[in-house]
Image (cartoon, rainbow, N blue to C red; front, side, top):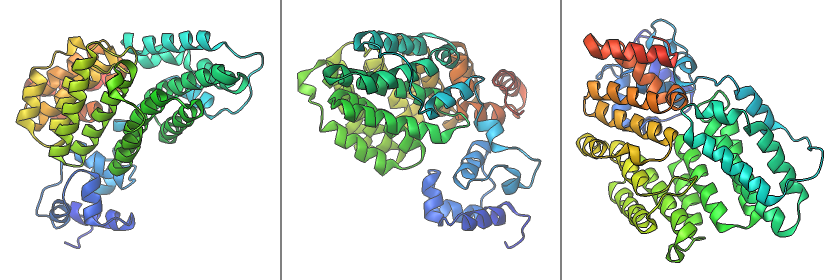
Length: 396
């Protein structure tokens, strides 16, 4: 197995070059050390495209040819698609220049931020919609949080945190991964400056997404648990919604780590909170429908395909009052069906997701890799997947 032309030898060489052991690499892609060993020894065939792309990202490989030896396929060409306006948002995120003029009054700023979040949830092209207002809103919110005093300053800091959350969502899966971390960190600092438990709870929810995306599940768990201690669900209303969403975040982390019992206990707590809440949070979108949809992700991450499919098939995605959330959860449903070998259903669900939000699907790494993978299938599945790949602008 020392032949440099084999996939296993290439994988082992890149793993050792990256300084990662087999258990570490396996953990980062959701597999065992034995699975990595079997790949390297040639006892398993090379994995399918989505896992190849995951291995490449973890090992910081920019071109899949370094692993497969086949025709060049830049990883970023499949997993990342830069939004046309991402440069403007990135410039605003990186700017430290002071804005001229007086600050915006806190109630006015709150209205502006609410409108931006409404754009994000109500548009079928949410990145395009918010890109028109996000750079100016970032500058305005930063300026107001610096210039106002007392309670007004704290209120402005809460709104600044919400603007950074929106920036984090916009920048996700874009060619600026460092700015996603920056947005999450600045949001938490703004929430802490406001000394507002509700704001810190929301910041923890969004920060945990970044940690989980980097496979730092324990760090995500810690930041969520610290935030749980700040809110009291017994008071109902906002604190109940924030507490429930934090429990949902804990469930997502436990499922990613394979801790089934803890995952479902946290999900049950979130679901009970959502039922008590009754409605849907206006911008966090926490509520009963969201909990039901996230249960599909939990079951899929725990590698329970039949359960995941059953949950996906009984979820009312129309009850989610957000185009981007509907699209994201439909992609998760497609992931569940593909895990259960349901390729026809997976392609159908991706098509539904695309109709809900072009931007969400076009910039979602899993949707992009799935469209490429299934486009090679024969018959109707391949034909429909090729149409999706064309619509997403991915390499076919």
